[in-house]
Each structure stands twice: as structure tokens, then as C-alpha cells.
Image 1 (cartoon, rainbow, N blue to C red):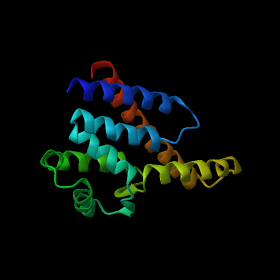
Image 2: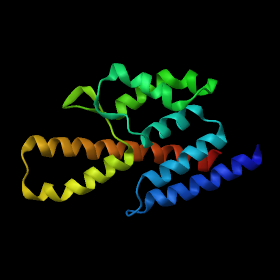
Image 3: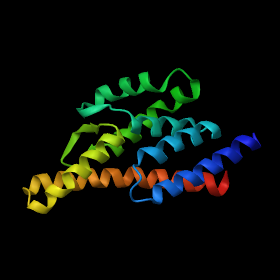
Length: 159
């Protein structure tokens, strides 16, 4: 077990470095965090990080999300037990204030690419509702990044 913890702490440190690099896509440290969570036996975080890398669909109905999530995280008992909490947490991380009944569920890589592509348009005085949605998407990414950072920091410092 000590060898797994040591490897997890090393990966967590690498992922934190990646996360601190402004040019590094968030998906890279996120995938390392999946490996860290697997090594540490953290089923909740493994499921939550994995879901962030998957495309659940844009404007998904929350009632359908749990079934999609269940099919993605597999048969492992620990993951199944965490499903309800992970599903609710994922939905909170992907809901928009402007559309609270919908889930914005593209993969984090697609979300990040969309925000980057459209950031230049924000300088062209877009309509207020477009600006508001882009701000929500940036906040969504920021929230994912923050949770990832906190998890990795915790593993690196405590193992």
C-alpha cells in the first residue's frame, strides 16, 4: 500500500504542476487525478473526475443523467455506492443559473475548447445573455479546476 500511496503522491504533484501551467488543458491533470483516485481507492473522486471527462450531453435533463452516469462508472460496488452523491455533485457542477433545469454536460475538454474559442468574441460586445452564459461556463470550468486542485493538494500533503 505504501508503494501505491507514494505513486499517487507523485502523480498528484505532477498534476498540480500541470494545473499551474496556463497553457495546459485541464483534461491532462484531470486524467492524472483519475489515476491518483484509483491508486488511493477513492471511488467517489474517481467517478466524479471520470464523469468530467465524458460527454453527458448538452441540455441534458437531470432525470436522465443518473442513468447515464451509472452506465459509465461500471460495476464496482464502491462506485455504485457513491453513485447517488456523485450524480448530484456532478449535476451541481454542470448546472447553469440561467437554465437550472438543464445540465451542461460536454466533456471538460470540449467545455474548455468552447470557452477558449468564444473568449475572443467577448471582446466584440456580444449581447448580454451571451456574455452571461460565457461567464457561467467560465465559472463552471473554474469550479472544476478548484475541486481538482483541492483534491490533488490533499493527496499530495496527506497521502
